[in-house]
Image (cartoon, rainbow, N blue to C red; front, side, top):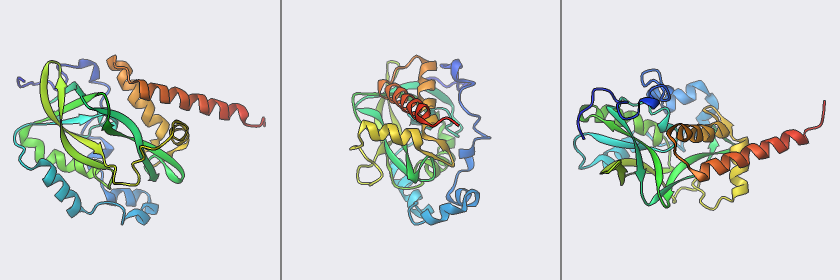
Length: 249
């Protein structure tokens, strides 16, 4: 693919829909910053990866890679990648699907009392998302930032997977559901997903807003993700029912 001077050359409609990299909260995201902002998170220190563990995971994931790096976003990376990227493109990853099966009880978008959900990339018929190209000179710096965020704790596996951009086949680095982690729950029922998304809230916001952002981003791009759209409608219907059941004051 030819070098570009404008990262949004292929998708000018995204220029105002992707958060500014330099001011993004996730640009300086770290365990210490989380604990400083919310001292209650100290209780989860043993759950998170140490810097050494995370760097070992990053080194293993990138072993053998050279040149520019494509990173696949299918959740919050789509609207707030916090990365200095040279190009953003709509991409499809075959053999995978976006599924909200990573349960959050640690205070990001849910708690023990009211769990929330994050998206994962799991086995499926195909997943639409955004691919961000990181210039070779920036790969070291930007992946360190990326892994501090995505690999803060067990939940994902960092893997290269085949993707398609237009009529071009590429490899993208993606974060895949790790089924060996108890927080990854492919057995969640639809009713549990609805309840978790409806009630989950934490330092990063609500699970409902997280899902709504995914749907809104896709609506803007003309992409249909039936799973996310149907789940959001079910969540809003559930919340409406709860409101209607509240006693009048």
